[in-house]
Structure formats: C-alpha cells, structure tokens
Figure (cartoon, rainbow, N blue to C red):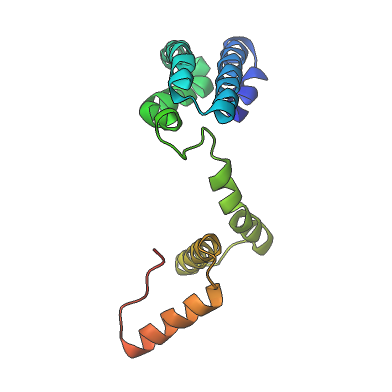
Length: 166
C-alpha cells in the first residue's frame, strides 16, 4: 500500500500505475478483513484470484515500460520476482499479508541506529547487529537477554559451544 501510494503521488504513467495498484490492494485488504471475520479460506482464495490476475497484468505492463518510467518499472519487476511469496498469506495459516510484525520487531533497532549514529567500524556494526538481533529474539521468546548473554560469555570462557537462540 505504501509503495503504491508513493507511486500514485507521481506524475503521468507512474501516477496511473500507483492508483491502479492501490485499487487492487484496497480490494485485497477488504477480502483479508472478511477472511479474518469468517476464516473461510476457500472464499478468500476465490476473492483474491481475480485480484492476482489484475495485479499481475498491471505489474507485467509496468515492467515493460521505457527507461523514463524506471521507478515503477523497477518496483513492478521486484514484485514479479517474489510473486509466489506475495500470496503465501492466502494458503498458509498464521501468515499475514503485511510485514507489520517484522517492522515492529525492527523498530527498536532502527531507532537505536538513528540516535547512536551507528558504529565506527565494520566489526562494530556486526556486533551491534548481533546484539540487537539477540535482544529482539529474547524478547519474542520471553527470555532474559542478560541471562542469555551471561550463558554466552560463560560458554565462551569454558570453551563450550555458544548456546543458540532457537
């Protein structure tokens, strides 16, 4: 929705592309809303079938556009590359059609990096990435980050394998 909104605020062909994509996305999320109410997966699949065809046609047309339409042409090609993954939510229970959960998980790390101005080395960047990843994983597992890091350090000192966060 966000990307199609951005394109709809452009000019000419880009604006038309974005507006058409938004119309499909709005109908798709309406179908998802109905599914969340009645949990009828067969009806969801029936509703999104025509939307898939409409969106695919829109993306394929945009992917063939001239170089002056580079922005939405690139976006369309990227969506077509991951086409099967776009529709996983329709057939796999527990999968949502948005990335909101992932974005919420990354929010703290993004804010940290913005406020801290990052690190001064590649090694520092890797360390921060790993610590932030461990922090989010521990929170999702309702596990103490401090306890996990203590286990990691103790294992390292003993020469034991590092405990996993699985």
